[in-house]
Amino acid sequence: MSVTYSSNESVMDFFEFRPTACILVGMIKYYCQTTEQHKEAIDRIMKKLLKSRIQPSFAAIEVFHEIRLERLSKQNINEKAWLKLFKASPTEALEEMFQEPINLGKYRRFLERGGDAIKLFKIHSEAKEEKFMSAINKLN
Image (tube, rainbow, N blue to C red; front, side, top):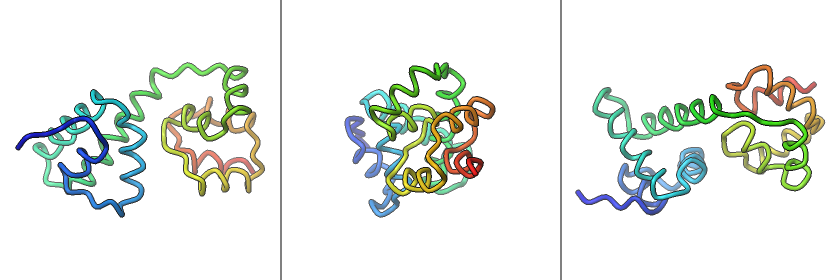
């Protein structure tokens, strides 16, 4: 089977993921922005599938979780620079800090919890691996 690594659809098609799998589609769009990232994701998902008998969608979620943790381990965010980015583009700043896609619903939830960017930055600094939704639940 020939694989094209150039698009999010190539990842979706290769593993026969349904376009209605919103969380997975969001992860693919977030973690696979270059041809190299598409290739890496497919290769890593294939390796995971060869090692275990899980569904491709679960393998993909595990791989994207691993990629997130790898990115977080290399992360060195300066509070002042991050707050400047947050003022210019809040969702982009949140995605950069948490290394996960932030959709409108997640962002609204953040605002409903007070939208305190400084406090959220401190929460993240204390527990980098914590997911966005868990972190914002600590805002109140």
